[in-house]
Image (cartoon, rainbow, N blue to C red):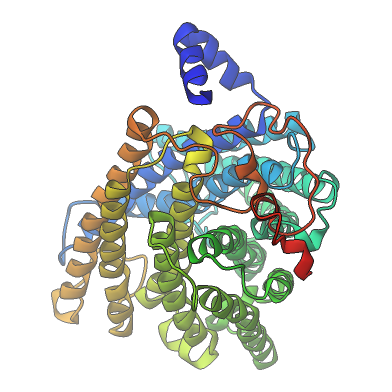
Length: 547
């Protein structure tokens, strides 16, 4: 009934009225949807840039892309994936779900919420406007000094890049403030922090990390602009500046950024695995403490990206220890997910398939991360393709598989329709095989000495076969993303009606209609346990009696 009314309402209204409603909305659900759609568009763009990079490296002495164009492509690919795909899609999912999960009617600051989206979009457009200056920046997404100095980057492209990231960072900060205020101040009666859904808990700590990580990056980008346009010398080595200062500032943002991207995924996986295992999340309290520990420790590991720059042995030792230390709470989470699945009645629906894919990706990336956390090993393989393989397994494999799990799980709630399971399985297997084929061989080419950030190579280095495998893997992944985009839009009209709770889930977002009304809940629910819907469905065996 809700779907029919929703669709008939759309049919009666002119498209200009619908467009006006979406552009001016302050509804957290519409804003969350806009974030996700923006991220999907940027994901397609970044995927095309990655494919161009891989086609150039398909064979030695290839002239498909020139060196400057190649550098522009990998700069824009990395920048887009981190700032305009990873963070917006997770903030968007959080925007949609957090108020529903905690029994609130909206975010704490609805207008600030809308501002955050439009500012983030403006930042992305500013970065891509750099193409209009004669070419995008060719400085890498990390923008190491002195590449950003006017001597080596003479066009305004680098200025648009820095300005765009400053602007989008403001949007990200507004989202973090809003999440913290909403989670701490707007929970339903009875929902203590120890009873919030685990996704909400991870969004809280993600927001704390954003408040610590984005301001240093913003300050560093402002210093880049001052160097380039007003004659400052923060990073200009030829005039007494320090290239290492930029690395410290950037990686103080860069490593917490890894957890800004992965903590919400931890939360999504922690919601999905229990439902499809028909068991409660194993060790909720330990998982919650591990999340807080990860957020705290991750602020002290940034310089493990800098083992090869010549820091002191004391500094190297500190960052080796802190890097290994952060793996402990991460390991706790991993084993708790496995313990949740152990002995459960596992249903391999598409959200659970993507969760299993996430576990595989994150395990591989975590193990190679421990290897790189040892300074002597890192000395040998820093700036090689081994590092690219590692961080793509953690950051892209972990985030992508987890996000796809979340989208397949909550899509019925957002639209009232089910995604096609057949298409979802095709998407999963193509992505899994393509991903392993793309980034697995990078570890071997890296061990064989292939440096990152090179646009061509000699034929006698032993890298040709591994680069060809990597490029084939990238090509295999492309139809996976095409299937995903098709499935999202085709299911809006042709998907099977979902009902209010198609997965027989336990958290509050499934207590309202699909899609939810503008006000979310007619009556704010009262919560007695971590599984409020279980309590409603099983009044003879409520969760709260075991607490």
